[in-house]
Structure formats: C-alpha cells, structure tokens
Length: 183
Image (cartoon, rainbow, N blue to C red):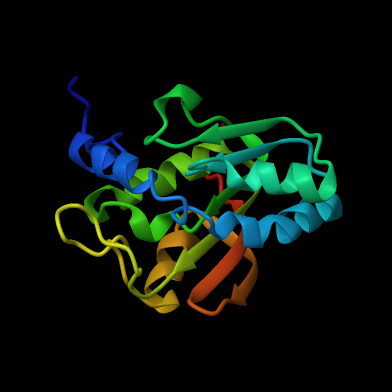
C-alpha cells in the first residue's frame, strides 16, 4: 500500500511498533486523567460530538461513561487500531498525549488533519520530556521532546489558543481552528 507522504500520518513500520506498545496495559492511559476536563469543556460550550484522535484503547470514552454517564456521539481514531476507521469531524476533538508520539516528519500532516476534523474546539495535551517507555527499535516513545515554546508556534499556525494550562510534564491547550478558506 503506497501513500503520499503529503497526507500520511504514520509509517507502516511505526504503526506496527505502536500496535506492540498498545499491548502494554499501562500505555495510553493519560486520557483517564483528562476525562473530567473533557466533560467540563463539553458542558461549558454545549458541544454535541467528540472525536478522540489517538484513541488507543478508548480509555477516554470508558472513563467518561463510567464517571459521568456520557451520551454524546463518540468517534475514535487511532492508526494502531485500523478497525476504528478514519478520523471523523466533531464539535470537540481530543488529542491527549499523542502529538509527542508522532513521527517528526509527519507532524505537520497530523496537525493539518486535526484542523480538518475540529469543528468547534480542540483539547490537545503534549508531554514535553522523555517517556518511560521505549519502542522496539530502542527509541524513546516520545519521538518529539520539545518545550511548549516549540509547540505553540506550530499549533498557532492553524489554531487560535483559547486556553493554555501547564501540566506536570508539559501542557494542554483548548483551541479553535483558524480557517482561512471556506470549508
């Protein structure tokens, strides 16, 4: 299967490594901590749908259902789980502890895809330092380890920052897409 690198968001080799990492029950659990914030954003802005970009094992929706009886349309996307299908647009797009895992040469493609699917708001968290976990090829699981001063200009090319909050290992933002052309 040949994909144009212009639109590619993950290489096949890296997809396989991510599938292996997801076998670890402690991988992809950050969204559990963000569930209360996601609920608050949905309620505050009266949002009607949720897209989970980099959904992993869908811990976000599981936690929202268990803690808050969540009932909005939910669209998971994760290239390590092809059964989820393509990324789908929603009022709120969550991308929690994902961007630092993206292959550096494909980061712009991923950000452009986030713009495409973000109807109203995005909630993106980024860890800025190394991960505890390593890939099968020996690389740190956080392929991009950069401070917020590196990330924010990249995000601001496509999004307006509505809110910026520091976290223990990085930051999270709530954003709205900047649309220069009619979508």
